[in-house]
Length: 250
Image 1: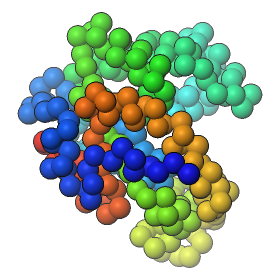
Image 2 (image 1 turned 90 degrees about the vertical axis):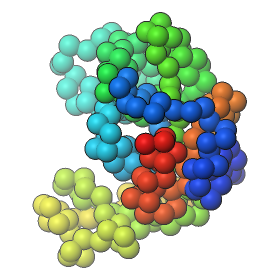
Image 3 (image 1 turned 120 degrees about the vertical axis):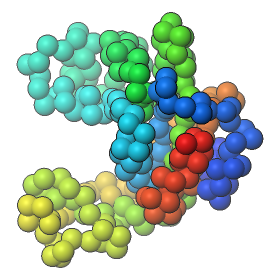
Image 4 (image 1 turned 60 degrees about the vertical axis):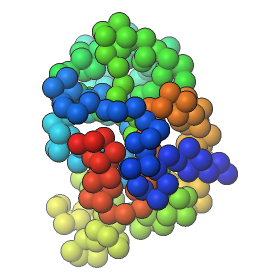
């Protein structure tokens, strides 16, 4: 299995070790930061995105959320590329690079946001990264950093093995770190909590291996451009958030 820490530039989670290898980020947020989020399933990337949004007022553009919203409302005035992507997703197929790139190009107003933007789910491949670079260059913008959240495989397996999700409202719990008040039931709606099939250890290992193999070229691409900021997220969410802010000089 590919080691998710192969390109870890912040060994031990020390952001000071990042500073020598990544270019200096803006000292102020006047122009907004444009950041890419990378991280395997289970590392807590979504939590970190939420903490960043609240801390520095940055917006988030998740292509996964974009597609889910489009699928939930197929009668909305979607672009031809979005409709084609919905059809492919419904058929269980991957959305090709050119289609994803066209969709993101149609959402350029999100990338121009003066508050900055967190790109989550795009780019996923080197061709998508090339296209993003070209799109931003046309707008005289650039990516300020690529946050790569890393966690050893065994810790990811352990985290996801303890995750439970409400069947009704979809809220997530962790049996050790964030247990429900009543065992087996959601605090919010009292729905039944269950373990997702893809959170079982054998399924998690397959997901991690797939993520690593697909993401390795992209991580290497940003590593060579001195834009990769790898952050150890083995601590608490707040500890990882602090490391993120320090690595971004905020």
